[in-house]
Image (cartoon, rainbow, N blue to C red; front, side):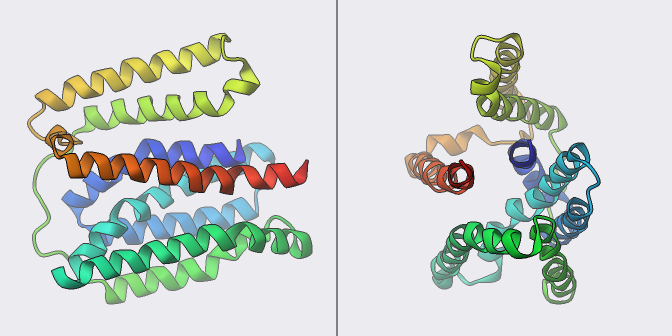
Length: 243
């Protein structure tokens, strides 16, 4: 639950937070997300019980969604067209280094200082990041005034949350158990309703016309496969070594 609560929250909120950033401005959403992540890291480190740790990890996922949803768009806006590929590539390299160095560094910290310091190390970095964001990042001149598709946001959160949670606990609960079947049913109904809704909504959470582009669709599919390969290793290897 400590791992899954974070991932389910990010999956449920990522697109919605990105849409909120279009309306309110990316700088505010980024800085707020980073602040929430920093505060929740402190709460995770000081958690008095397993239940509170899981709850604070979910809150940490809310903050992480705020930063993950807007960082690529902020990079694209900050660099001229001829430099955007290099900027996005540098960002991908840093993300890859973080994914690679995180587990062994976390193991060293856990072994010598205890598991709470995995969260405490985020605090000074987060504070510096928030200060730098408020002082350095420019304010957007013309954020969109289109309304937020709250119905689409609810359907997306329910669908992806139920799907992610169901797949995560299927082996533990049993693939034919009532809770698992219920999660899959909620996911199927919510995501199907979402597809119908975005085709009819005036300002949908996700523009279905994007999927008409073969470049966008194939790139998204490739990215999905890449993340599956990368994060499957990052999530499961610690449990493998423990056993």
